[in-house]
Amino acid sequence: MRAHRRWGFTLVELLVVIGIIGVLVALLVPTVGRARESARRAACLSNLRQVHQTFQLFADENDGLVPIGYRSVAGKPTKQFNSMIYSGTAKKFCLFGTLYQAGLIKRPEVFFCPSNLDPQSSFNTDVNPWPPAAVDPAVNCWAGYGGRPDNLLPDDVLKTDPHKMARLSDFHAKAILADLTALPARVDLRHRDGVNVLCGDGSAAWVARAGFDKPLQKCTSNDAQFNPQQDEIWAALDKAMAR
Image (tube, rainbow, N blue to C red; front, side, top):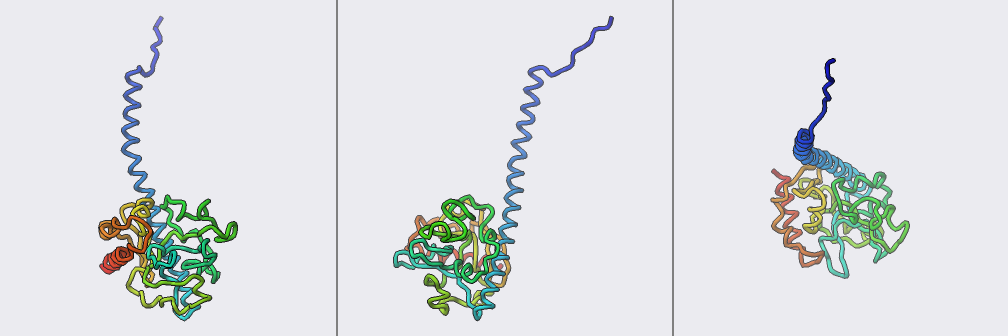
């Protein structure tokens, strides 16, 4: 009678197969990660273009003026504070919050970068709840993008002194919004290698970190002493977008 042969893997063969699978996974994971980040980067660019439409609507209703700028912190004009929506300290809306007051933030999630890992700059987190001031009026609310810090704007600018705002048309070929560049950590916690930038004419593009990293690395805290470095960063973004 013919004997039946048992088919199967030996332990050595099984280990070899597992090793091959491990190598393939190690090769594929970075590729998948890069593909996901590429998709998030594209979504971020789309967000910025939609935010531009919101600013354009605001400008159309307010004689061309837009709330793009920065605010004071403890009496010091601080250009790193260019992304707030609501101040829990002052109990007032500010900067991007002016759009909210005007009823123009219909899709708030587009004001936040999909690559961001920082809860403070993410949509509707414990430390950055939405809607602003609804649950606890003492909690700050931040947007996920920063505005060009040229104009010092008072809180509740739409009610107090709307003429402090700049005209959108003044920034036709200049960067007006970007992924946060207040501190190195803000860049590290999203795209890392650069930022997406929006110009006043609605065009948006990727700017590599190498072009603005030198002044960025000097910003070691959120302090008005780093206002000159913030000016350098935005000048670098202008230069990159002009190419």
